Length: 297
Image (cartoon, rainbow, N blue to C red; front, side, top):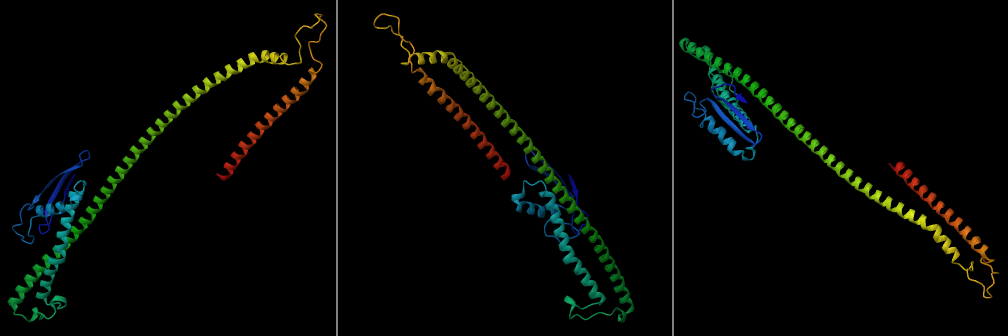
């Protein structure tokens, strides 16, 4: 980028060409112009040349050396400082000199001075004074008009530079936001992959557990009839031994065998009903907790 300051030999006539490397965060600057490395031969207002003053400003702002707009802002600062000094010191001095020579006012610093009256002066001196005052007044007006334009240029340039800086900051923020969003999407993808793997492991473990439970249920079902028959036949309700007299007249099944069924059947029914009641109570408790959560949310 190239920035050229508005030309005014009392203020400065220089420009800046600069580029910024975002990878290394370094700025390359070239300061160019007339009289930037030596004091103006036709105007000795400034004690130092423009380049030296600008370098002193940059060296004083060490904490901002990495900022890409340090050099252009320093150029504008130097230009505005010289402009301010010239407009508040030198230009009022010119106006004061014209007022003294014209005798129009004795206020302020001119208080106590005797006002001049050009009309009462000799004709040849009055013509000379009027000619000199006309030139001085014309120069002053030209200086004031040009400095007004220069001030307008400084305001518009600083506004554009601020807008460029704001746009650069906004672009950087948008870029960082997009990068962060992309990283967030990657994170969500990783979390989803981890969750899918975990769900796959849980499903595999559940499948193995289900297979084991099926095996146990099959074995239980397979041996349950035989176990039940063996348990019933091993009770005292059955007599499988021969009679002592060697005759075959004996009772294998006891007359009290009905007591077994009288107790076993009711107990089985009670256990079944109790299990069903517990299941229903559990389902109702889960449903009521879900309704409370929805009402609170």
